[in-house]
Amino acid sequence: MNDWHSWAAVAVFAGTYALIISEKIHRVAAALGGAALMLLIGATDDTSAFYSVDSGIDWNVIFLLMGMMMIVGVLKRTGLFEYLAIWSVKKARARPFRVMVMLIVITATASALLDNVTTVLLVAPVTLLICERLALPAAPFLIAEVFASNIGGIATLVGDPPNIIIGSRAGLTFNDFLVHLAPLAAVLVLVLIALARVLFRAAFVHDADRAAEVMALDEREAIRDPRMLTQGLAVLALVIAGFVLHPVLDLAPSIVALLGAGLLVAISAADTNEVLSEVEWPTLAFFAGLFVMIGGLIDTGVIDHVSNALADAVGDRELGGSMLMLGASGVLSGVVDNIPYVATMAPVTADLVHHLGGDADHVMWWALAAGADLGGNATAIGASANVVVLGIAERARQPISFWQFTRHGLVVTAATIAVSALYLWLRYFAL
Image 1 (cartoon, rainbow, N blue to C red):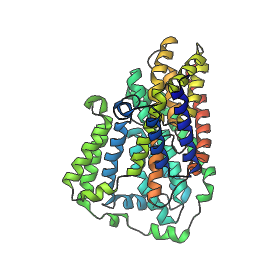
Image 2 (image 1 turned 180 degrees about the vertical axis):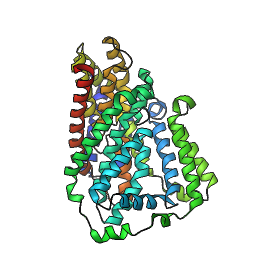
Image 3 (image 1 turned 60 degrees about the vertical axis):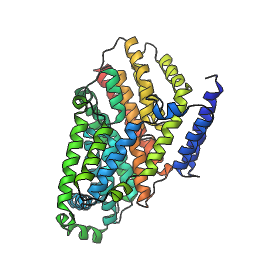
Image 4 (image 1 turned 90 degrees about the vertical axis):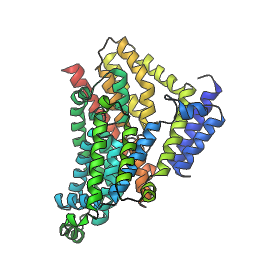
């Protein structure tokens, strides 16, 4: 890192990150401003920013989000989310903590089958309606769901985008992730529920009158357009099938989402302009700026320098290396989005596994996956799902600040990383 471009890129990234944390200016303005500075100082260029697979904007993420936001926009008009909100509250007997537990379990399970961003796009509108009905603050419930989505996402190959990168690089299958990481995910969901009882205890205020009103509702009356609902659910089922069958169909999730959105807009009576108005354009712009900034760190060799330092520190120590990989990934994925982090670390991890004489399902890969996925919970911009939920909350006029999210996220990340370390030690070294 002797090149001045490297130090300038670090300064731009650190300054932008400080502005996002301080909330002196909007995070979208900060990210786009940081991206512009990266381009101005020559840390990256237009070719890298827009076309590079390694260091450019991840258009698969951008268009996956856009497609799913459009599908959710159509479903929102059918009354489906009101139906689910009333049904969930009645099943939980309108008790706030029971409602949170139900939402955590549903979100974590869905995130194992879908990617975590798709899951929060579907669950967040339901949560906002539940909180409105029960006069509860939405922020604790939304934050808990983000944690659950990132935890549930570690269980399968398709649960979190970093897992897809790891699976592709290491030659790991859907079943490999299921066997090695699904048990850990199940344990961590229980840990999250226990933590949520303490972290969000101030939000569990039972309003008997509001609860009685919801318990008296008939959820079936919430459905406003049965025909559009049938069309929307059919398309959503096809999209989910496309995600799961990705290895067979060889279609990127973004293509599947866009095809589904286009099909639903074409066959339903939904107004195209209204559907497009549901897209969280500021969130997409934030991601674009963030990707360009991180691309500047990649192009100037900063992330490579960090990765190589980690590889040197590991050496031949398999247990120590696994723990270091888990911990370092947890920390770094809280600072930079875990997708470009894993994309950079995957070749380094492959070299380490080869050096240690391991098989494709070596513990080092599981340490990388668990650390990157769980580290995404540490800060408000650590994972894609976090940023999406913050955008949804802001649009609903219930904004979640960087520190409001992060002060809980650091606790959850520390606890889940510690449990993961114990799991890896017991499974791969002690037993």
